[in-house]
Image 1: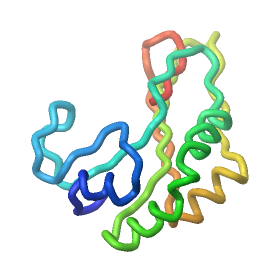
Image 2: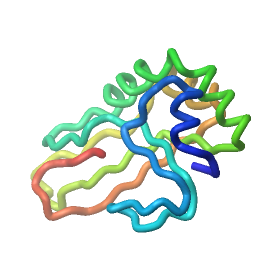
Image 3: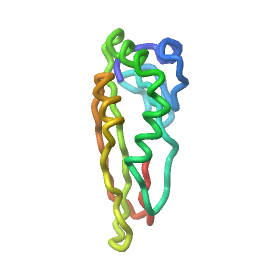
Image 4: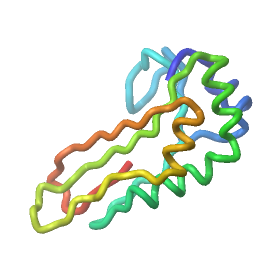
Length: 132
C-alpha cells in the first residue's frame, strides 16, 4: 500500500497483480480507496483443512523471481509490503482449525523485501475454514 500508479508499479515489478487500484479510483468492493493498493494472492480456498505453511510456500515460490524488483519498488515509492493471511474459521467445534505458521523460506522472503506478516481471523457460520 502507498501512493503510486498501479500500472506503473505492475510494469516495474514485471508481474501481473491479482488485484490493484489507484487512490481515489472507484472500487466496487471497497468504495473509493484512500491509498493505492497492489495485491498478489492465492485463490480463495474453502476446505475443512487449510495448510498455511504450504499455501505461503507456494505463494513465495511464485514471488521469489521478483524479489529484487519488489524490494526496489518498496524503496522507490516508499511502500509497505505485507504477507496477509485472512481466515474465516467455522464456529463448529467438530471441525479442526488451521495451524498457522511459516517456514524459514517464507520468513526470509518477507524480511528480505522489508515486509511484515498480518494474520486476520474471523468467526464464521460457514462450515469449513476459508482462506483468502
